[in-house]
Amino acid sequence: MFQLLLIIIYLSFISLGLPDALLGAAWPSIHQEFQVPVSYAGVISMIISVGTIISSLQSDRLTRKLGTGKVTAVSVAMTAVALFGFSISHSFVALCLWAIPYGLGAGSVDASLNNYVALHYESRHMSWLHCMWGLGASLGPYIMGYVLTRGESWNMGYRVIGILQVALTMVLVFSLPLWKKRPVAVGEAGEKEAEAISLWNAVRIPGVKEILFCFFCYCAVEQTTGLWASSYLTLYKHIPMELAAKFASLFYIGITAGRGISGFITMKLNDVQMIRLGQGIIAAGILIMVLPLGEMASLAGFIIIGLGCAPIYPCVIHSTPEHFGPKRSQAIIGIQMACAYVGSCIMPPIFGLVAAHISLALLPVYLFGVLALMVVMHEKLVRKLSHK
Image 1 (cartoon, rainbow, N blue to C red):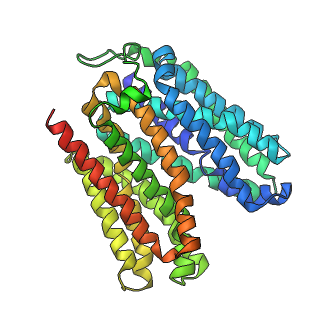
Image 2 (tube, rainbow, N blue to C red; image 1 turned 180 degrees about the vertical axis):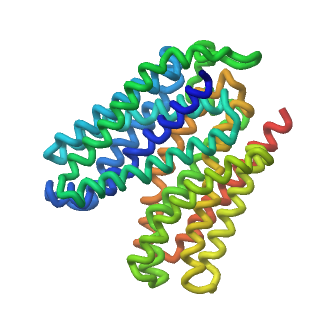
């Protein structure tokens, strides 16, 4: 039964990834149809992100009240409704309104599922589950592209993903008894007994500020690299646009494949060692970007950064119950998710200002500075917890 539940959780992580890259894939068609500026995609993205931050911060309360199974089912259902809302929208304002349940549905399920896996499964499963998220994030644009090439509108693409989310919602509803059958191990908190911790009290726990900054920095590195890689290669390195776009997309493939590989490496290394390994690989990728090694080295640098990113996100989450205790982990993971989305929202645009007013060539410097802060915060966390 427990293995069947793991399969359902794997499907849930694929479902989490499916809608994430849809907006980018559909936006060229949407902005032309609605006759709005290309930059308006950022408005919808920000609404989704704000909703996700809010629901992440509420995930602790919701999980204690409903349990992980119900939170997951309700959240996926909300996402399905929002996707169908996108599929019937014929104005920019309508998209903005449907973006609200879209974001609210994503945050709580992300935090709740991640905490459940961190408590109940080995580190390798966390890496493989996030690999499944990458699979979903890759499938979403592929499905949208397939629909568009068949002469259908972008609305149909959202409808197809919405149908898949409805199917998963039904699976989750029927699987609710499985979430209750797992016995609570000695020393492990049940969902109802988890501590309720306010944001203010959480940041006062030794090590929490450091892990939040570490998570913020990781997501800043990932999202800034993903957003600006193609522009850096094309406008600064003068690499042809098509080739630059292809290798920039390989950054995400590097993350997804890297998480598949990381699952096996976690059988030999613990979470702290995996995070350090990832940070070292990111640093190597940034160094390769700036060295005068030629065009292919610059392209390879982004793939290496993706491989370095792979173990950090899942291992930071998986280590949270061990660092702060099972009773506190749900609240702290919810706050971590909120910090992740804040980092994803604000740090790529900040580099955009740097690129516009100074130079795009500073991308490696910017990434290295954020990486250095991540390393410092992670090492401070390890030192604090080792002296407890």
